[in-house]
Structure formats: structure tokens, C-alpha cells
Image 1 (spheres, rainbow, N blue to C red):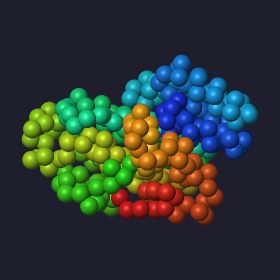
Image 2 (image 1 turned 90 degrees about the vertical axis):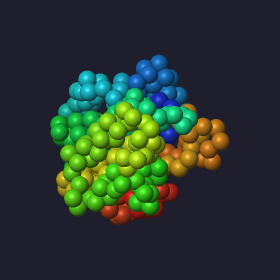
Image 3 (image 1 turned 180 degrees about the horizontal axis):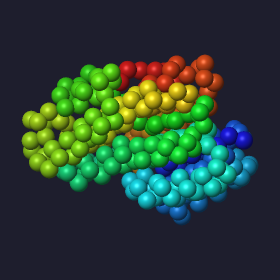
Image 4 (image 1 turned 45 degrees about the vertical axis):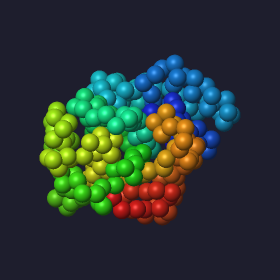
Length: 271
């Protein structure tokens, strides 16, 4: 049986990613979430509905180094030192309303960008993702910046001259600039913390893909979904939003057009 780890799996899109993977009967699914009570409830619901006991809760807060380290040790032990087949980075946050300040910028970047890096880099460093495995990042078209006039983010599109250090520098530059919200746009940034965080993570997967020989890593947009983050007016269900991530995780490799790419509705689109 294959193994999959899904962050932010206790509700919304992450919940249905776990459920759809478990429903195949081919995956042991580690549903990772901060809230233990909600996580255990989600696991019980999934196991009862799909008719197997293949889904298990593991505690994870991607914003904290210690939590990620503890999770990695648990996965190592639970999986008997064997690497996992699939990692789906789904955990994320988005601020509601039009407010903007440095604390908001720092928190959003810490979860949506550094959170993905903590978990992915930690597992890769310990060789806990199989060489023919898959890494999927649930991102957003909000992070597609090619057509936007945001000077400070433009370097993220120059993948040939991009490095992890440069992406981190841009992330920290944005957080520093947010100390004075009134001048952020004048300095060449935008005030949308969510969009900026997703632009950073989209750049990260492109750089990382060049370092991974046999592991496929791609980002995807689930669309505007009815979740706590997306709101009740969204046009898609969470179940529909989960489908592209599950497809990237499970489809035969000849159906996945490359690595370091961005997908929407199972089709590759530009960054």
C-alpha cells in the first residue's frame, strides 16, 4: 500500500483530498492538522464513509519548526523508516477584509510559504519521500503574477536566475516593507499578502524541481471553493477543489506534463 501525507487535512479541500485518496483503497493517508479534536473527527468520518481504516491523524502546525520536526519523526516511525509516496502541501491561511499590516504579512508568509518549505525540505533532507514519489502544493492563481505590474515580485518569474536564497530574500523584503503599509505600493510591492505568499511558493516549486531527479513536484489551483477561506459564495465545492491535487498525486506519470509546473483543472497554465 502506498502512503500519503496531507497537511491541513481536517477540513475543506484538505479533508476531501484525504477522503478521495482513502477511497481508492491504495493509500495509507496521514491526515495532518493543528486541531487534534477536529482532526480525529475528520479521520473517523472518512474511515466510516469510505469503508476502510486507512486514514490516520497526525498533529502538525506548519508554522512551527518543532511541530514539523516532531511530525517527521512520527512519520519515520509509523512508516517503519520507509519513505512516503505522496506529500500534499495543503495547509494555508488567508486574511479576510482589506486590512494590511506587518503582522498579517509575517503570519501569511510564515504559513503559506515557509510552512511548505519546512515540511517539504524536512522530508527531503531525511530522504522520506520516495525517488519516484510526488509532491503537490495547493497554491492559487492569485500567485500567478506574470501579467501583474509588481516590480519587487518580477524576479520570481526569472527561474533561470532564481535560487532559494533569492526567494527568501524577497519574502523577507515584503515583510520588512509591510512595517509601513502606506508606502508598500510606492516601494514596488502589493498589499495582498495571500497573493504574495502564493507567488513565493510557486517560485519555490520551480527551483526545487531542478534539484529533484525522479520526484515530481507541481503546484495547482483548486479554484474558488466554498471553504472557511473561500466563503459561502464561491462557485465550487471543496470536493471539486480537491480533484486536481489528487490527480497530480495519483495519475500515471505519462499524463502529467512535466515537473515544476502549475495546473488548473488538470491543465498546465503559465505562472
